[in-house]
Image (cartoon, rainbow, N blue to C red; front, side, top):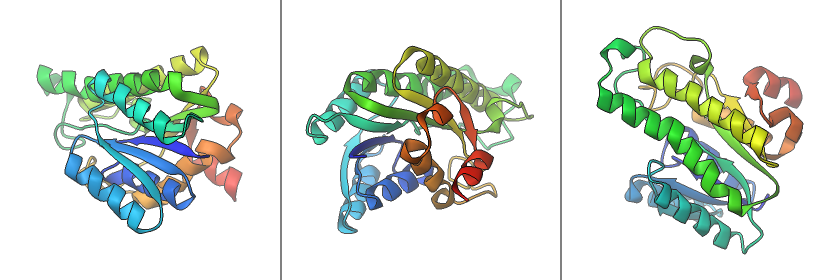
Length: 231
């Protein structure tokens, strides 16, 4: 693997994934809404001997995403993008405390635009630049498939993101899959108790190249499958 794109890489899962991929010799093209934060991550990766290109991009804006993928394609020296991790996401409010009946229309719309439409834009704009054998991965969680009280628009958005991934898997030659990373302790989850981002990043690395494409394509791959395959 030569070039990977990771969205929402200024912190949490995205940052951990970008750092691990860079450690493995992959040139990572990373984005986030906050230019200063994403630039700092890239500079840190470079200081540690990795290779990174940082770009301020908002996945709600397809023109930002288009430029991101064009940048990644140029960074790959025209060999194409090997992997896209559509990680960027938002949660408006405290996890478990945002029942759907109390969600504002603004929060609902922005959550869907970021977490579902953002996945659509990320994969759609990557398609012209994907090389043969490329993979697109969508981090998710059980809340997308098993409703729990208080997760409102976020749960809806993750279910929609998984549906987007399944349809791309049906339509594209590239392998597109969902990774159920379980509960991860990040700022997005209000640091709820869970695994550290650094502990789940290896699962993303495995799915990006070590796993058989058939294992990932059109599937929801969980921690159990990863641990069984790598033990």
